[in-house]
Image (cartoon, rainbow, N blue to C red):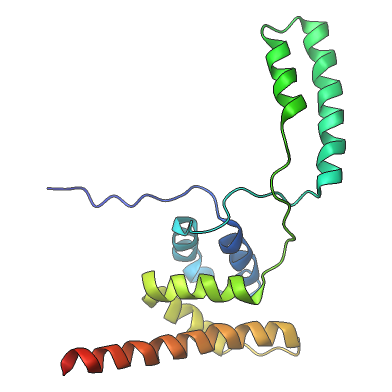
Length: 164
């Protein structure tokens, strides 16, 4: 009998990470494990990124290179020159701001609605009860809820066509 093993990425892609951070402000504790599993399995978009601006990366790289050179020299590390060369030529990953755009929010919602519809409905149910005076937060909640409504409408249309 074939195994139904689910392969889960052990880290979040950028959009899923920002969506998870955004969700953390709501009381969804009973859904946390399911949310983590669903979002860690989501790997459609940006996988390699850094929150460090390039200038800061270069400053840290110089400091690390200086410290590693001293360590390699003082301790006569085997193949230390290879490590130094690697550190010297390593480039920064794409810098991204730590924020959840409306586009990324919509993209993750579409993924959840399609692949984890029950979980997505549970999230929407909890968010539907939340009120806030923060207009940006409210706007994002409305985007999530509207996506669920639009997804259900589309699904109902498809189901009606299949019945004909």
